[in-house]
Amino acid sequence: MPVFHNMEYIYSVYKERSFSKAAEKLHISQPSLSATIKKIEEQAGAPIFERKTRPVSLTPFGVAFIQGIEQVYAIEEHLHNMVYELHTLQSGFVSIGGSNLSVPYVIPKKLAAFKLRYPNVQLRIVEDTTVQTKVMLDNGDLDLIITNRPLDPEEYERLICYREQLVLAVPAAFPINEVHQAQQLAPRELGEGIALVPPERCVLLDDFAHIPYIVLHEGNYLRLCTNVMFQERRIQPNILLEVEKSSVAYNFAHFGLGATIISNMLVACYPPGDGLVYYKIRSDHAARDAFLCYRRGRYVTTAMRKIIELLTETADSAP
Image (tube, rainbow, N blue to C red; front, side, top):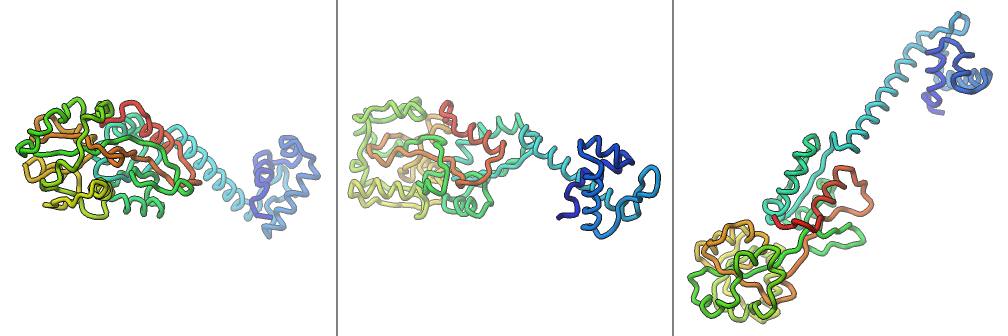
């Protein structure tokens, strides 16, 4: 029997200074209380109460024992208060990882609103590759990640965070744009309105096979999607430059170096008139979902649950 088992019996006798009064308060018989405390003392290895005094007093060992009980009660109260604060979002910690699209462009608006409402909840935001954020999720270094990769649904909970459309961005000075003026996207069509652009206004990459491209490095999931779209049209692209991030590819395209394939959600963050012409690509691989993921079976805190609800709202999903 653990030393502090039934410690409320010991503490009640200490507070009441009487076995009979403590038994009455605990709604048990005095003999039963005395027998229980005797067993606790035997387990502890020394008497806790001096029974010959009136009222009942503590032995020197009993003083230390009561101090131990009060420390246990203090820890319990601290944990109770911590749980209350966690449930009411007066404290907490959530770590989120994502790509160079989701972290700087998609989630800041909603997470800023969350932080303003719950300032005592600490947030850790990590921007890294999809592969690395998944490793951190598996290691317990991250609570949530945002990824386009199709993770195993038996191991991960996956909720749609946002939907995006990959678009072709071509420098306005490229002559190919003159041939496809009717298919060029208006600024209002680069956000959520892109879903309403009909198939006849989409372009095939065949018509843009000869122009130079700026692409992401191999291993990036966007590069994988880009490769698949070129392969389905049997195109060997003229890759002029490989970069780490979509925003870097956008900047090089903006300065007229070459075309690039990027998310419409990134484009929607920039003002119109950026020197680029945009096209919706005719391919089943151009539309994709980004998922908010966490490992199945893990405990979901109140702060995590609130952020999950916030980031998976279908309304106002654009940055």
